[in-house]
Image 1 (cartoon, protein in one colour):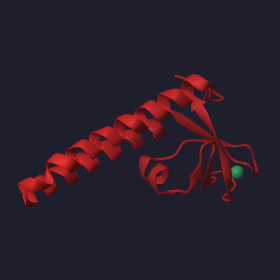
Image 2 (cartoon, helix red, strand yellow; image 1 turned 180 degrees about the vertical axis):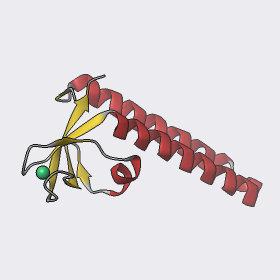
Image 3 (tube, protein in one colour; image 1 turned 45 degrees about the horizontal axis):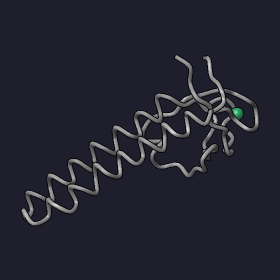
Image 4 (cartoon, rainbow, N blue to C red; image 1 turned 60 degrees about the horizontal axis):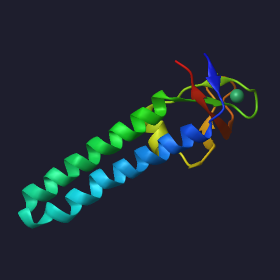
Length: 110
Ligand SMILES: [Zn+2]
């Protein structure tokens, strides 16, 4: 598996996607609730779809290195969504050694 450290361009791309995500969920939040339960249901669908898109994109484009054994591994979108993290670290259980640690995030090269 090929990987590299994150560059400024990667951080800007991530920031752009997060801003796009926020725009996609905030604008409908303003205009859809007056339509009652149908509007709220539509907004919930937009929220779920946008969240899934953002988290799947992040999970598919990152790779993690265990702090304990240096094993490289990927994670599922669900794990990506629910685990605690900082900008360049994520608290994960290593599939190789089974220990939990603040794994370092790298960009996956395709
Ligand atoms: Zn490990």
